[in-house]
Length: 294
Length: 265
Image 1 (tube, chains in turn orange, purple):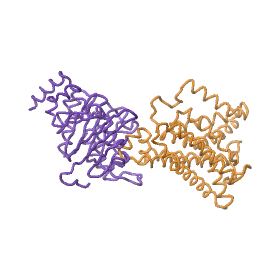
Image 2 (cartoon, helix red, strand yellow):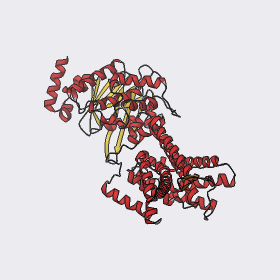
Image 3 (cartoon, chains in turn red, orange):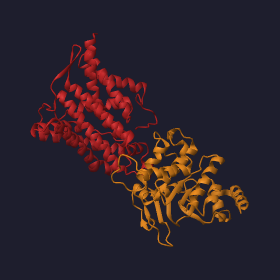
């Protein structure tokens, strides 16, 4: 394997991994703090992608406004998820199952809203940067570098928010012990709404990233959501930092598998890895029986 | 902090019933607590003591009856709102935020527990820090404030829960088995702490199985059995009450407690 091929694999593996990381962190955050599996995550990704498309295509706004539109839409949908469904279920005994069903319903609503608003045909994501840089003999598109940089920036911001801010501390406290947090006056409803908004915004950004490479279609979120689940499971459900490492590692492995075995074996390899990991470590690579999630 | 009108109890529990399906955990219970008073609650396992705390602290609201605090009805308020009203609570079992340090644990309580903040900001203000320092100081955790909560021994976990409760600057502290599982030496440290809090004029309700602890610190004792009150009065009267001796203390423990009370008098 020559150096050029290796560079190529690393460049595309890191881009994949960065996109996966952004979508996985949102999913993992919601699982870690609410114990809620959000099956509408793919729908949020699609909505984010289409929001940027609408802002830049139909309204003719510049690139940063496109990204901002996606972030706002994701946050708004996250808030709606909380105020429209989750908050009525929190006190129910079967919260964890009920809420999954509710998010399946939400996923249908989101996908059909996209169909109704934008139609079924695939579209090109206008949020693109042209140009490329030369690394050795390999041409790396600027778009890939932008994706990687945005992803790293977002991960850094999320980590800072969780680790350093008071509100982040409340999120971690609520994740560790909801009742104790409540008794110390943390308004957990507000925290949950915030986590869902944050996760929605992250999903929307990852939707923009993914669609800039693969194009827009109403069902575009399905595959990436499945991959995000795989990464969550490999990392240990709810483990946010583990999810980022697992996303980058699996991105690189997928790129390698695509090159060595052929493109169609990339996803299959990921699934194979999950099976092996779950046999070897049922709680995931970074998971423990007693999870300290955040 | 508003003062309660003279003569008005700080906490009024009136005909509170809590049932889970057919099981009645607390049955038509009424009692009052005055400002500055220390009330001890005892009784056999399953008597409904912890359930009563769940009801007062709002984690699991009463099926019927009412709880009034400082003249306001708090029966159906959320746990957060009751915390903001001025009631703090510790748990029987460890309830710390495991991956945070001792100080960070208390900071959560001071930050969110003292008043209802609509928008929690990004940094701590001076008032919050002072409240955290005071809580760490009185519990003696100040030297261990950088330790991670998960790594603390049992006594420090109990102290940490109390520190968290105090950092919310409560008017009433509910303590659920503060000395359960501690050695006699460690129990004494909690005794000193409760005595200090009492001297500061704080109102306290505590649940405890260790009867010496309970009679030593309480102004008044309440014994529950099957969710009902079987005794309410001064600690001294416990050993003379036939029903208490019968269902809870037993003859042996009752004699030991009686001689302990003699020794203190």
